Image 1 (cartoon, one colour):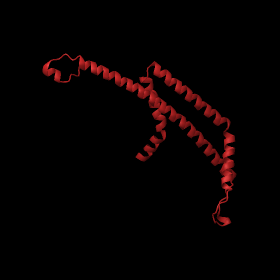
Image 2 (cartoon, rainbow, N blue to C red):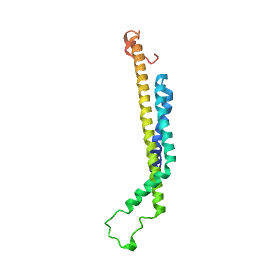
Image 3 (cartoon, rainbow, N blue to C red):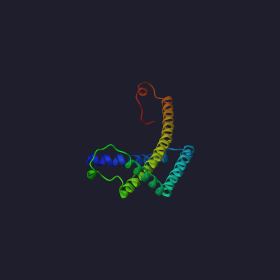
Length: 163
């Protein structure tokens, strides 16, 4: 049971990671960081829509080219010594077309995954900068609290969590 859940988690991890980073970016980024983040996301969304549109418009052309490549590969000279009656037909048009469609769809999914990965990296970079800015701010506040500690003697040696 755990292997199935691990497989599902691995399958959806890139999209869930991107979703979590988007939520974290919405909480942490200031206005300047948000503007640069939106610029990147808008550019990547345009790229995504262009890839989708290109996929939909040229799907049949891609399938035809892939089918032709598969036919050429199937017709290549192979040095397998199999009797004629036992071999498989490498030129089944339905099978070749189905395989071509699968390859074209897989190529499109790979292209979309690359765009998602670039968005994840850009979002992670923005979030990391915001977290670093927040840590610097917290350090300054802590340093100021330490410097302004006005307790005397033994009280000063114990840490006060009220400040």
